[in-house]
Image 1 (spheres, rainbow, N blue to C red):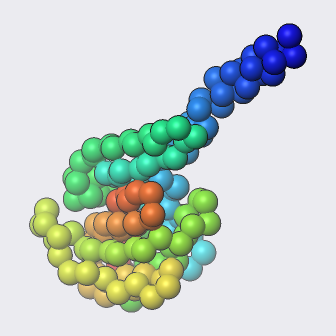
Image 2 (tube, rainbow, N blue to C red):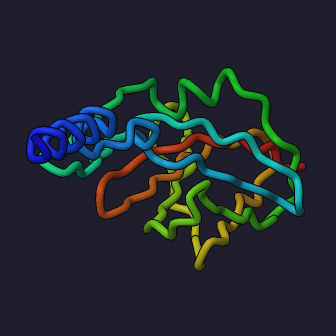
Length: 149
């Protein structure tokens, strides 16, 4: 009798927790980008994310338009020549991050990142920038657009 109740409680807990899956974490954290205290919109693009459960691993792969395509529709945040953007993530993680400027629908030059600081372009005009962040359990791209004045 007691064994049956214990077994029922264990089964109930496993069912309620989805075999250990945290369904709220089926994707990468949100990127937070700021320039001089002003928020810069960062849109999540393509990503691959794995979540470990008790008995399995759940993998989610999401496709999206290129950063160039997304950036064409975005309004750029006004920045100054050579400003620095600070990058952080909603879960306070510290992934390896790279950044490229898109030029005419193709990857352009790589932008320098030191720690969590991204040196923005110095040429005036609208710039579509793709950030790629890599964690142990996945990777994601983010698009930001800045308008250098």
